[in-house]
Image (cartoon, rainbow, N blue to C red; front, top):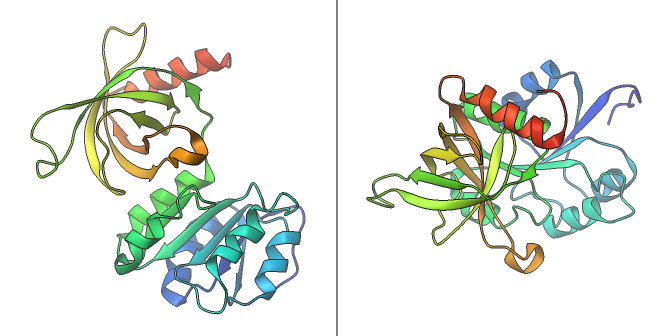
Length: 238
């Protein structure tokens, strides 16, 4: 691996083939990251324990290293990468197994079968994880017809400018996309938009049962309304 410039931001790619590297590096270089690529081996465990990468991206499954050992080394309290963003790159056939690692040390998943624009959207979301505020608000969602024929009413546990954590009597698979209407406290008109399920909570570890979503789009000037609401709650300028 090439020497690191300490004044730059760094991302590590582990065990990615040429397709994975070509899908990710244009965006990472555009975001002013230095991109380092390595083959998967036991050497990687020491590398991520002692080298301050801001993001670590690994193939899944990854040959040459035990994946659970990789996560354990990265999230160890003594690892300098313990707070780094972690993303895994899969093929669609491995997506269901990969989803089980969300919030067990993995923050995001992308499939190489997805359109490149969608991959970049997920990477961009990982680069800019927005601060969240605790808000209990009603949200009405319109799932795909094959999952529900009527509107589903849930509650937010927290919201941010880029996503929300939802809870209620229904849950939906990772990757499900839906339209929503979010009723913010003190606002007469809902926030309208579309979103995608990106994770499910670990009830034993987090003490809550729900699922996280990221916004895909917001209607009209609703992003501005949402940003203003969150900034006001945080006590910072919008």
